[in-house]
Image 1 (cartoon, helix red, strand yellow):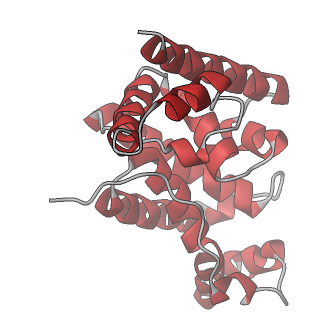
Image 2 (cartoon, rainbow, N blue to C red):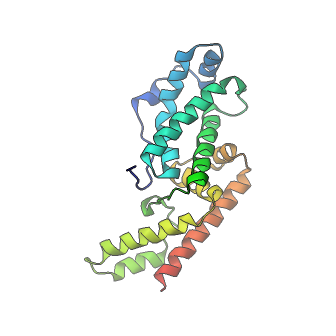
Image 3 (cartoon, rainbow, N blue to C red):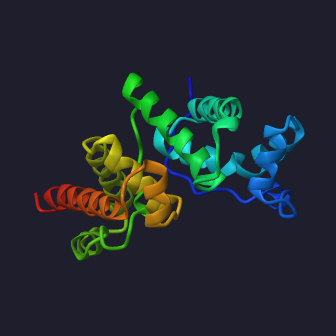
Length: 210
């Protein structure tokens, strides 16, 4: 059975520095000229980061591996269409995110969200007070139940709202980068983040106030 779990942050590997002497655009031009080995450098540079995004959207390691590979294959097949209007990183992320969202829509995969990765404002004073009121033996069970409630709340978000939460809160991308990846404006990204956080906060408040 496929392994699932909570959200993860990108893992920094030695591959991140492999292409330090080459800019992404110069590598893209080499690939467009027929140098397949240059594409291997781009794969090595961005594989872990793209996998992290896809995994955080699907919460399934096997699916994330397959979708990441598919994204790189699709990017390679379309590399001649890349004109450099955005960064290669943004272009690749867009392919990966779109693939993951399409997969979620087809399969309705359950997503899991971690309390540890959510913005501080969502972990409101109500949660802190509720935790303080619990005995030492009750806290682990309470946290597990709270985690489940947060996961349920995230499931109610649309894919577009879920995506901006993952890219901003977990991947640490800027509003501008997310706007480029999702082909929206910075204002739209901020609006979606605000709405998503309000919905998650409301769900947690409703649970804590019962």
